[in-house]
Image (tube, rainbow, N blue to C red):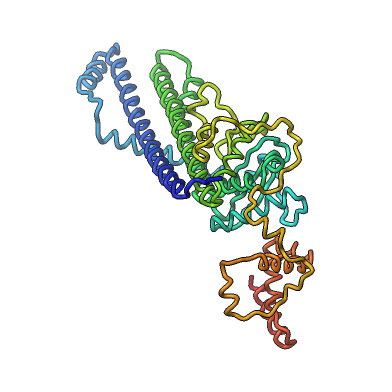
Length: 456
């Protein structure tokens, strides 16, 4: 099977990043246009006010406002910059308030969506495989291992990454992802989610949500004005102002959502390309997408709370109705698959039964021969070797090396293996290995450890 050249995917990453930068700039331009629209709306309201007052029964008052109307100009630079600064500050404060309400760690978001934390000591084969894949991708991407959750009530094939920083990130997968994907496919999906964490996509999404809310609040204020003021001669100016604010606010938020969806689609393409960089296997991710297309549940999410987090998921979790093409947070499946597998002809992998036995066996047989031909586990792994021999073997594993490694792993007690699955347990094992055999030396080392533990 011929894999696509990795350089193609590096080029796609650069293209996706460039597109995202242009879209973010477009977002800033949209906010500027909204500020300009609000300025001219304010000036229009002022013209209407001067016009109505110029018909006052008080002759002096009428002449005064008529003179004001005659000297009126729509362009007033000082006033424009004052309104622009005021609106910009209003949008910024509203956006920051919204962002602050979303300052939750990835684990909190996963639990909100019905996720269950998978313990490092889990004995479930599917969960153990997931944890192993997450650890592999953490090494490949160069970031720490995040918390891992499973959405037990979701039969679809989907996953998401959440968290504003590398330190509070979490990855969650649905039950269907665990049960229906092979190891290579699962690895592709997890690598995709690691890309979101590494590239700061979740932080970008939070920022975009905050900006959209800052724009939307303008429309909300306009709606409140229309609700609380009845149409009358005295309130006609407020009614017109409320209508203009509502139109600008809701139109602006819709435009913002269009741009946000476009940004999300580009970030998904970037994550697909980065996943190939981590796994070096585009077909694992492509096959996972093919299963989504042929599965009765697809990538849909039933949880009500998941709708507000649709941009976080691996696949399209909800349909966007009338404007599904414009407001979709993910590119079409066919487009994503063809970028990974140019030979794709539109044939999805049909999955008829949702209770299929979990596919935990990897389709990658690169090292299969080594494991089958490995030395028996009963063979003694302790052999005397010269330093020069060790150096010459670096990067050149053979059948004997794999067999000896398996034998060493088999000799490690089960309790120690379980301890290595937690940070505290791994640190304890390392400390135990570093302890000396001399009683006085060990006593000194224990004292150092106790002092370090005390100050910590």
